[in-house]
Image 1 (cartoon, rainbow, N blue to C red):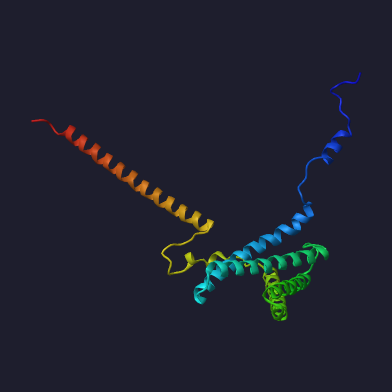
Image 2: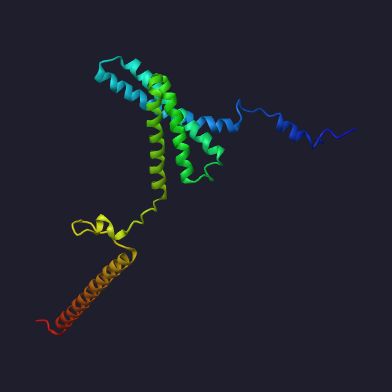
Amino acid sequence: MADSGSRDPQSAPIRRRNSPRGIFAPEIVDLLVPPLKVGGWAGTAGVLAGVGGSIFKEGNPVIWGAVSGFQWFTLGTSFWFTRSLTIRAWGGEERVTPSDRTKASAIAGTVAGAVGGLIRGPSNILPAIVCWTAFGAGGQMIVNRMAMREPKIKDENDSWFRSKWSPLKKLTDAEYIDFMEEKILRVDADIALVDDRIAELRVVEKAQEQTSQDTPSS
């Protein structure tokens, strides 16, 4: 009879394979969730813009906000989804060059412009494609240039505390040590003066006692 405590070594992989999973594969989640987040932020901005526009146009803020939010949500989602899909097809964020990112953003802008133009009407497709392609490529070029810029090393001497107009002064470690040593020397000098004064008073006191003892009583 086999020991009830023994386990089949192949049972663990089987249980792992049968463990519950999500509805979508992780690859699909990684591909869909970021564009939806970008679309959510864009849709929120669109709602605010639509409500603001309805105030100037004296329109219904609910309808304007809903329409504008839907348009911006679609633009943001389609743009980021196309860009992510293109970059993943070219090897991922770690392998693509700044030039590849610019191309991917231009392609994403083209798709987003086509989708946005289609929502607003067929006559708006071509202008929207041109506008969003330029927006995607130009924005990515600005981002690339900012990413390549070397971080500026902050010079402590340029601090506002170093200005002659500042009522405060920022000290370095060496200046602080020198400052404290100077303070200690001043305290030691004051203590020495106090000790000398005490010694003088004791001498005077002893002299007065000696004088009082030498003076005969009447």
